[in-house]
Amino acid sequence: MNSNFFEANWNQLKELILLKWNKLTEEDLRQIAGRFEQFIAKLQQRYGYTREEAEDEVRNWKPNLSAETTRRDRTGYAGSSTGTPKWLPWLLIGLPLLLLLGYLGNREAKTETTTVPTRTETTTTMTRTNVASDNLIIDTLRNRLMNSEFMQNLSTIRIESADGVVTIRGTVASEQQKDMITAIANRIPNVKQVNNLLEVRQ
Image (cartoon, rainbow, N blue to C red; front, side):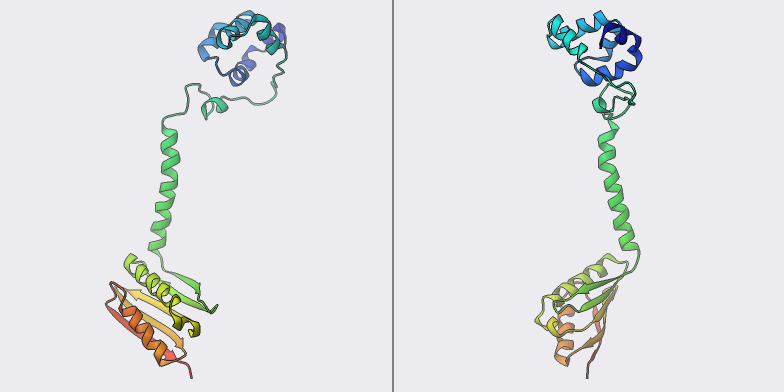
């Protein structure tokens, strides 16, 4: 790049200059004001170049004026050279937090049915209520049943909990399994009552 090109395209080159020589400042650009000799002098001042080194670096630079240029690479957003805006870190932290709170709120606000694989590849369908303590009861009972030896022969069951009253429906292989499920459910904290409606398969 020669001096004529530099001076003729000064307005388009300013942004590119800040990207390539990031030790230069906005104040430096105001002082340069499109003058090639002043630009060479600023490079010598900021980078410790000799005049020949500064001229060689500028001469070998081939800026692409057709590309849209912003200061995003220097500041993280377009149109400023003062650094990252103070609100940006708060936005980056706050937005995921808001999304998480929204997800948790929706999760507790609706009743959903989840199919859970057991150790015998059967499934247990559990209806979750919109009460956090009932969700905990259902999850705890599910985990304890999955870790029980009786799950090896357990067919599909459905577990519900409303205000600590647990209702279990479905079929099991034996009365022993039915009684064991009742005993496990009664040992779970906050369970007030267990309605075991399981039927023994013939």
